[in-house]
Length: 339
Image (cartoon, rainbow, N blue to C red; front, side):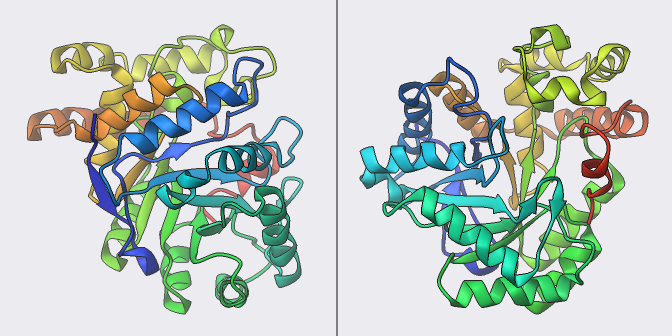
């Protein structure tokens, strides 16, 4: 299988990546996701790409059940075992969180990037760095200036943002080109501000990383929180609890039938819709297994007719107006969205 590709934005327009990227958040977080299983998942996505293209990998300084660097340590082991894959991947890492609070001071950003690289080890350098949330205490212009200082020091090659509003993205890009903006984009998350970010990014030549395109996995095979393993972080999210989840699943109840008619899986159809929002929109599903990684990648090759796109967009717009429960667990995290 050889999958479609696209180009990144900002300062990375010369970088070709897979049409669908690979989120690593859940890797190593369950007993089943051993190094062997996770490594096979990463390799499968990379090996499906044509020569010269890179797999966009998305990690975090805090991707673990303990809010620690276990995900980065796993990547370090991967690149130590398979150093030839370093140049075949484009690695983005989110950081600069102190607990649940973003700190985008130069001091903390430098601490963050040094910590990330120390855990990644010598085989792979971070390609793109993203503050995980916009620090409300510091003007975005100053945050970007801090990031440029670290960029010039050589800690990473490109700057990204996460959970930013369209206005913030425009102000940031005026200081220095932003390569990618990471926001949630799915049939459950297509609010007016989502559209604004996608359009602003298109106008400015910035990539959009659309995370959770399959509704935290629920568009694929899960129908209730009981389907989640014990301790799974998703059990804390109001959108995925009890009556809220039952209602929200009803909003996308047509998805399985539409997918069957198309001859694809519901997850693939959901990913394909996100990709069809524009060539600069790159779906960011997560996967710890090679079979799921290949299924996700294949979704980037699905072409939607105008009628199919219209039907799915209507579902997304109706869901945005009627979905119940916040996107996060509530509390401080929820208030930091759309910085």
